[in-house]
Length: 42
Image (cartoon, rainbow, N blue to C red; front, side, top):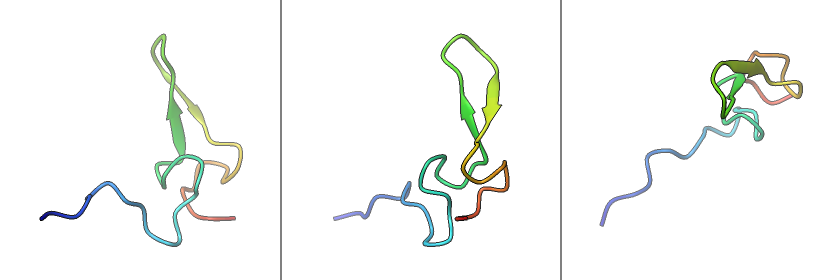
């Protein structure tokens, strides 16, 4: 049995999963407001 590998670290932002941005449906990306693009939990 394999574990899920897409789980974020405990220090990752819960909204963007530590990426620092959101991928928009129509193309492009937007900076995460919660972590200001750092990807770290505030």
